[in-house]
Length: 242
Image 1 (cartoon, rainbow, N blue to C red):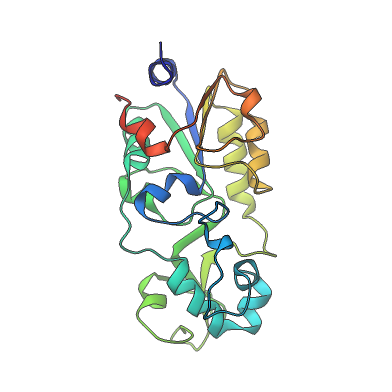
Image 2: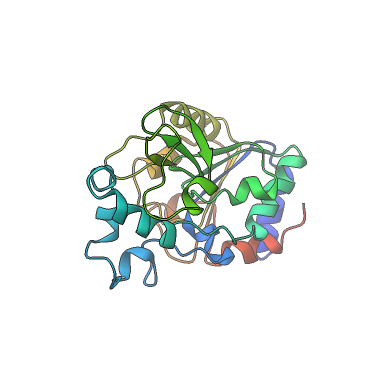
C-alpha cells in the first residue's frame, strides 16, 4: 500500500477530520508563502526600505500607514487567486459529513471560496476590514479601490482584519480551534512547517487516532505522525477520492 492509498484508507474510516493548514496550501493557487527560499520574507523589495516583518506590524500600521498599505496591496492581497485541489477536497469532506473544521493560518479566504463552511482563521482575513474609528466593517474593495490610505466615510482608517505582528490572536477563534483539534479523530497538518507560534502549538492538543503530515519540507513533528507525505498538498488531495 503506497502513501496515497494509506491516506485514502485513513480518510475513509475517519468521521471527525480537522485540517490544520499553512501557506503551503495556497502556493499552488499562486500565492507566495513567507519563509521558504522564494517566500515574501526572503525577498528584498527595492521600493521598500523596511523588512516585511516590520511593515506587517501594528506599530508600523499606526506610524507609517501609507507605506503599510503600499506593501499590503501589492504583496498580501491576491484577488485573482482561485481554490486548488486542497481547498475543494476540504469542501468535499465537509459535504460528506467527515470534516469538523479547517483551522488555518492563511488569510486568503480560498477555503470559503471553495465552499467550506467552518473555517477558523487564526491570523484573520484580507477579505474584511474594520474602521479604526467607528468600528464599521467593509469588504476588500474598500482597500483596493482607492489610492493611499483607505478611509471610512466617518474619516477613520480601514484596518485589515489580519492579525499583525504585536497583535493577539482572537480568543474565540483560539478556543474553537483547540476544541476542534482536541475532539478530532483525524488531524491533517498540511502546507506548514509548524514554526509559527502560538498557532503551531495547537496541534499538541490532538489526542485522536490518525495524525497525518503533508508538507514538502520536514517539520518538528514528523516523528509523531502516523503518515508523512513529502509532496505538494494539492497533488496529494487531487489523488484522493471523496
